[in-house]
Length: 324
Image (cartoon, rainbow, N blue to C red; front, side):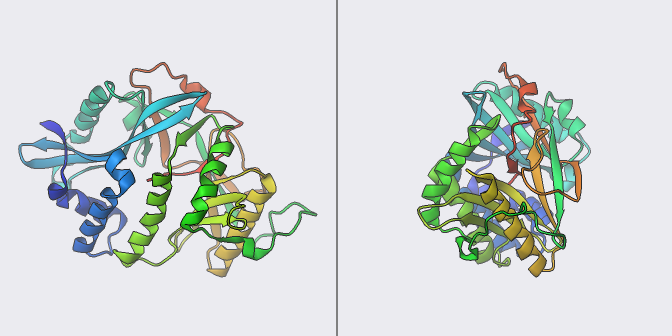
């Protein structure tokens, strides 16, 4: 068995695995086109590889390798992100995923400081491979309850909260950077990643025929004066705030208030936000709090990273998995 990069011409079985799990109602040919198009963006070309465990010409297991930089405790760490870890149905239960990850971790030590992934199965599977779980929690808000704004808070004209356009990225990028300096850990991003994320939503609509607005970048402020932003995942059963950042706490409150109101109009009863570390959201009272899923896992590879420092009660950034 051999771990190797999978080229564009050999992506069909990998794309079909992804489609069956995350987009089962879409057309297989359209999804293959979408999958290849995502990997062909400027950012993906520099930061993403599809890896596979091969036995001759036969694919057994696969994952995506993301090359990103993380800033932790004032130092930039070269980080290997592991995503979309899957084994083909005919080969499951034979230890191929474990074998593939062990081979990948051994190889990654030569080029990366740390590894990271989001575990959607039992986190102990990854703990046995040397990963450490970083605590996260999920907070749920009831859209039918009273407003989360503090008493006496200034009203924000509704037209200031709007769907972002590419021109807003010039404001969003430094906003993210300035805000994230207070966090114990954040990704180092460039304009191509932000454009890539915006384009993903357009491609899901254009290529896959999925409803518009499933993933939304929402901002507060006029063009040139954006005060806060939020990545929002709008599902039929619930909406999820996948990332939110702003220079003022009241701006974040206004964004969440708008989200609760819009979700209520759409007939959605709950909005969820996920927080890294032991912090609580800086606004409102959630109706429930639970352990964050999927679990966020870090592998130190060959580094001396103090993983305990990542559970920082000051790190009140809301986020999830959809960076890429």
